[in-house]
Length: 325
Image 1 (cartoon, one colour):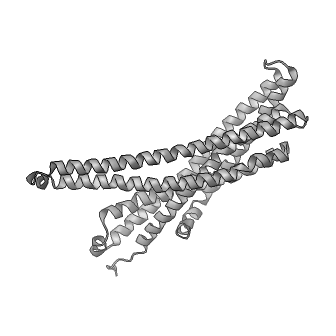
Image 2 (cartoon, rainbow, N blue to C red):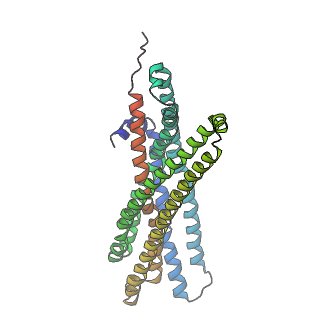
Image 3 (spheres, rainbow, N blue to C red):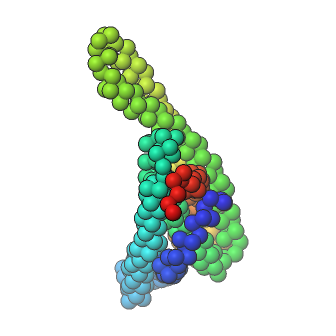
């Protein structure tokens, strides 16, 4: 992560915007978790009364749930308007810095570097870095805060059940990280195959007169078909791997729900937990699943950002042969 450390001055420059983003993350997660207990209370209230119709107490709980949901949505919007906007501003500043460096390079430097490589550093590499600055940072901070707040509420409800339900989540993150790494590798292979098709088509159009002169149309058609088939096979291979990704997430969600039913059911029979508390646990688990499933994606984003920032730094560290005096 050495290359990404060069971005620290940008974080410091936009510290006020990022600080507000942190506060909005805390507020968003707090209200998102705070409302869960009122779902359980509503269930318990309806269970006690034996009447499925709404009474005054349930209506109060519903109003609190709706209010918390609105506040969660508002603070989530503000979270993105601060952290994501800060990442966009850093992206703009980084692109300007690279462009200014372009203007300082000599003709010899341009001869040693292809146009495609120069454009990739200004576009794809900067976008990869921006993904780390925005969603990459936001999701990590969001997961830490969400896990902290949720764990406090879950422990207050039942400690042993909390341990049993949270135990599989780190395992889920590890499995998703492994699957994401495979997806990332296969995605790069597919992109190379796509680039090969683009290069082949570009060369064929550029030399169309030569192709016609030597009657190589069938040769071009055959080779194009081979490259397209190769791309198709690699794209299907990637799609199959991505299908495993979502299957694993659904399997773990089902496993956790079964654990809640088994453990919660035993505690309900023993009179240690109410139906409402068990309902709370279902909601806590489903709230935590998505952020944990993003760990693999965030890791992949950080890896790509590290490689891209290293390429950008190598370019920015290049000194021009022409020195203004």
